Length: 130
Image (cartoon, rainbow, N blue to C red; front, side, top):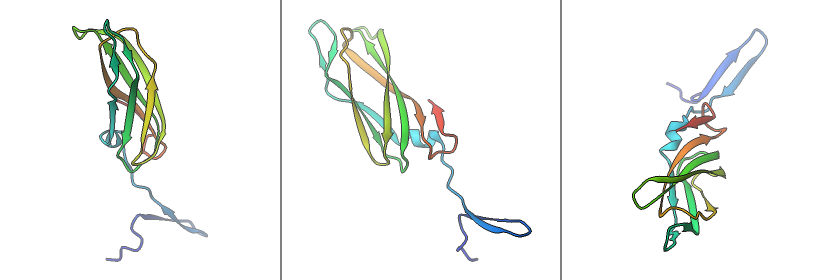
């Protein structure tokens, strides 16, 4: 079998024959497993409050991600959520990282975080809420 036309689709009409390149279809869920979000060693004040927090997104996929949204939750010593905020990463290249400085919080002793959405023009449906 000849593999020279692999990945191409031929479309014929009475007068025109064109060859269209087909891109592999990848889902946001597949990319989400290749993204990781990590905090730095932030500072916790004596009476609570978080300062010098930076969040870093690692894109270990083969695709540019246009926008990634993440949720941060600030917790008290008992683990109760005191405050929730969203942060956004823009245009993180394939294999790249982006770090965002997060404004200080007067409350909380610990931060938990998760990726909540991914947008990329290079994936099949373009967006995914996670």
